[in-house]
Structure formats: structure tokens, C-alpha cells
Length: 487
Image 1 (cartoon, rainbow, N blue to C red):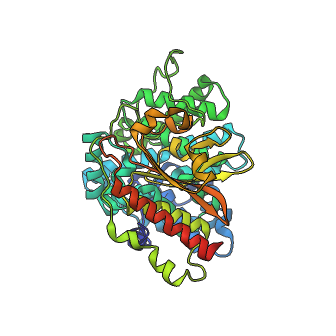
Image 2: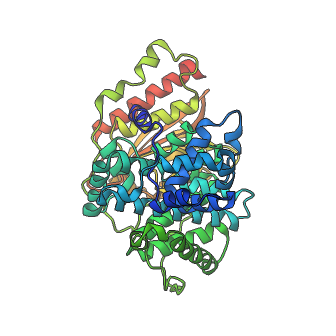
Image 3: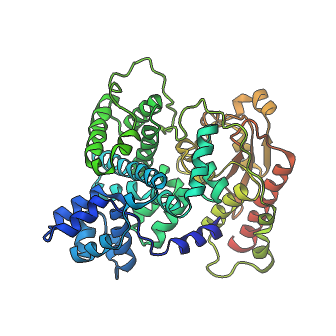
């Protein structure tokens, strides 16, 4: 996956994202613009905002990029003359082919909505720098925008698969491109030297960081809203945001309803397409108290829409050549700077996903202070917040305790799950619909460090002996590297 991402980063290069014709006209016709007016223009045009952020942080000297926390400051750093040049050298969205222009406008609308909701959640938490989380919310979508621009055919394929099969977008993106838009967004944020908080918000692990969790939740709410007829999912997301903030659902709904309507007003230059991309929230404040929600112990939102989707028929094929990826390091040892323990664990998780063909993979770390397992690295579940927030209490006996007490691996089949339900952690029961999984205890310096976990998520794609053997082999190679070189 990293090799494919690197090629895409090279392809994107200094790409200017298309801007609204309205923006180009304003910079051409208005001779005198204040910094306040320029900031207002950037806040109304996602493509222009991304171009300015990219330009500032790519060309900033010293530590200026780490201070970029608002669009207003970005405009001040770059200067109005340079911003005029960027607008003049950027293509107009309206000049693109109709089908691409429509999709890009909808994607821009989603990014703007996500950014505004991220900022509002941050203000409700009394965050000291809500503008930084506005940027994080905006840039979480930058990978998808780049994919629409450079590979519209692939993105139309993803859309078609989502419509025809009701599947999860992260898996469809992986099957078509070999990576997800979240992974590309994170890679771009790193390449553009974005502040640490903004870059961290792109990672799947962002859901476990309290300050960044609002950004992840805002994106999920925007995806639900953009589905047009998914009112139940919108309501569920709003309730979970309320639980996260410790506020009553009615208060959260009122605040974000105002944001939603302001977003529609701000985005008028996007045209009627943007209006159609968002569900009508009228009546959402009249929530039936008896309405069931998807709340769980983590307070996470459901990232993949309604629970009724079966995700039938999608099984990731193993990529056999990747199974030997770690062999080179085992034979000669890693060079200085090749990888740290964190890098190795993350790499192993992605190899289990890419090479073995397992839909969802996680490494959960032992947190001794709270005696629990906490999800740390994952693959195949970029937008599944519940999966990325998994927390298992080790104070209650479970299959994971056994794997940590005496290092071993286990394949829990559906029959075993049903035969010994008390050994399955409650938090896992809520995110595993197939009732089967692989798990392997991992040690560092002779002590339990964590658990590698994998499942298929899809009922029609059963785990098999071949996958289990490859799962064991890859984890054992990773364990060997730790024992030989990192202990």
C-alpha cells in the first residue's frame, strides 16, 4: 500500500485543486481586498482553501507551518497578491466535465460541512484552538478530492459498488485503488508539513484521542447527512456526539442544525447540487424517546451507516508476494532508521490486511494503568469508529487474557463463539457480526504487550485454515524481529 501511496503523492505533486468560478471572478474584479475578505472567500471555497494551505506549508520556512492553525493566518502569511496568483492559475470547477464537476462539488460540500461541524464540536468542548480542528475536518477529505481529480473512473467504480451492494466505502476504495482516501489524506498532510494535530486527525487512531475524536465524529455525521435518506443514521450520530460531549441530544441537535443551515448558506456558489447532497434535517429535533440508538460503552458512532447492510460478497484476495515482505529484515537485520517497534506493529497490521486478505485487522496494546486492551493500529476500518475505539477490560477473564498469559494464537470459530459466549468481551460482541476471528498474543522484552486481532467482517467470506496459517506466520515473523533486534 505504501508504494502505491508514494506513486500517488508524486502524481499529485503541486496539483492545484479546481476553485469556484465565483472565487476567480472576485479576485479578478475586486482591486482591493482586506485580509478579512480573503479569509471569507477561502472559507467559502474548499478547493481554494486547500491550495492556500498547501502552498503556505510547502514553502514555509523554519517552524511557520506549525503555527498555521487558521485560514486567516494562512492568508496573512501568504499575502493577497500570491493568493490572487493561485486563484488565477487554478482551473474552475465549472469548466470540468459535467459528471466530474457534479461529484467534485458534492465532495467539496461534504468537506465544508465536516469542517464546520468539527469546529462547532470543538467550541462546545471549549477547545483552545477550534480553528485548527476546522482545518483537520476540511483536510480529512483531501485524499478523496485528489482521487476524484486524478482517477474519476476509479471513483465512479467505487460509487457504483456502493450503490449496488451497500458496502463500506473504505473497503471499496481499497479494492479499487489499493489504499483508502483516509490513508492518502494522512500522507498528503505529512508531505505538506501540516501541524501535528491536523496530521494526526487523518489517522484511523484519531478516534482514540479525545481532542480529535470530534473531527472523526463530524466526518461520520457528514457522510450520514450526505446519503439523503439516512435520517436514522443522522439521528444516531447526533445522539453519540451528545454522549461524547456530555450534553443533552436536543442541545447538540439545535447547535448542529444551525451549523447545517449556515453551511447551506455559505455554499450557495456550489449550486443546487450541494443542497441535494444533504439530508433535510427538518423534524430531527422531534426525536422519539423510544428510538433505539447504536450506543455502546465507547460512545462511538457507527461509521458505516445502517446496521442492516450485509456487505455481501466482498472478500479480499490475498497478495501472496507480500507474505515475504519481512523476510529481508529477518535475514540481514533492519538498518538504522528502518523501523521502530511502532512502525513494525503498524506494518504488520497492514500486511495482515493486504497480504493475507483479512477485511479488518487491529493491534490492541496492553494499557497497564487501566488493565485493559486499547486499539492502537488498524487496517481495513478507516471509518469504523467503534472498531478503532475498541477497549477490552482485562479485569474480566476472556480469550484475550489466555493469549496474553501464555503467548499463543487462537482461531475462534462461530461454533466456539456460541459454545463459550462468556469468554467473548462484550465490547467485541458489539463490533463483530461474523462471530469468528483470529487473535495472537504479542510479547516485547518477555512481557505481554498486546494482541493482533483480525476478522472478515463479511458473513459470506469465512475465515479458513490457509488464512489462519498466514496470519500466524506473519505475526511470528514480527515477533522474531522484535526478539532479535528490538528487545
